[in-house]
Length: 574
Image (tube, rainbow, N blue to C red; front, side, top):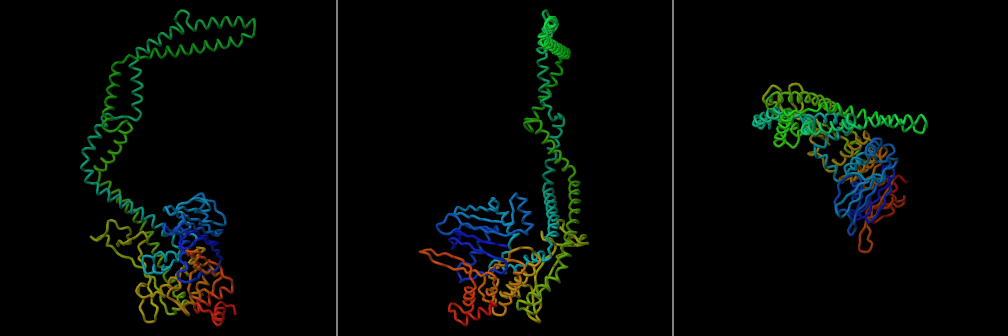
């Protein structure tokens, strides 16, 4: 639920804090006082887009902050946790909009994206904005309301995943067909490149190996001469290092027999003799393996030359050449076996089409199972709202594209049931439209063609009522849901909102005393003037102030004792 809403420098609002409670929260006020501005400000912290025009004149930025109780909202906690945002029993959402066009969003003081704020808002509030009931006149919105009623989110998600996969495969197939001529034209060029590269057959890492071997062969004489001299110095020549160390070691052994202080020096000398011995053996072995191989030297130079030519033509390194070879190899194989590649892709498409068709049929079946339940539920709610003879029908249609064995079959049809291909959208194979009859003897017709403004408003309230009982959104906001109704019907609408407030926190803007009189919390929106500036303010009414406001809604500006008595009776205070 929404605990409080703080608004600063937003439109006509200088600074305002509104505290809300559970149950039915009613906002009233004169036309133009700024009631809808408060709802618009709330929509900012729910992730709606904002214009710099909302910033109050002479201010640098507008700030809206909402504090929500979210202790039982598991989906919200999961979402926040997945984005490493600390979550507690309260969630503070803040939105800042500057005159420079910058917008910043915060959740519990953590900076978040507008997209994430919108996701959070969708788990907190169902905001029914002013004139939103007109969305019922757009049939494309009906399928979403049906799915919401049935809790079909999982099936819709499953179908959509398969639909998107199939869409990707269709795009791949289309791209392949478009490239057919291009591949055929380049086939000869690719074949020439492949033969040229394969004739040299470059190997990964070969350049470094060749360079190292070339360096050794080019310096073989130098290597032989130096290792020979080292061998002489260390072992074979007069005063060879090894001989000198042996003599020194013997002398140290004699000294150690006399004085143990020479024991460590003797051991060190023995170690040095062993090191020189190993070094001498290594140099001797290396010297014996030195090759003077002019033929191999020429082979390496020739091989390096071939690699250099390939690098100039196909890239700056052997790695680049090999990547190019791999790429054109695939392209050449595709050009050589285009029909085979296409057939393999078509096989993938057919497999995914079967998956998509099964998901679409399962979703469609579930939707059709809901029809009678939603028809009866809406009709029952409309009866409570003063349309006792209403008949409501959810019409679900499937549109056939063609037969699987006929010329009319569609290569890019997403769903096939039996021998028929059906038109499909990201929402499924069903085209849903609400039909309504409000009077006895009238046929059911599309909602947009038969309902008046007041009836549309009540149909929306009926839908919201039955949907809200199946949803777990903690807060429902209604901005002038009472448009086009009055008298006895207004009382019915008020009773419906009151009943709904047992399941959810309700915030509603109204002009009708029959609805305002049922409030658990009554907030008055007023326009005040301070100096040369006009501001909107909001204050909570006590019981007597509520009576006066309801009386004013009943009889206008002039409040009589009879009007006050009528207001008390309407509010159940007598």
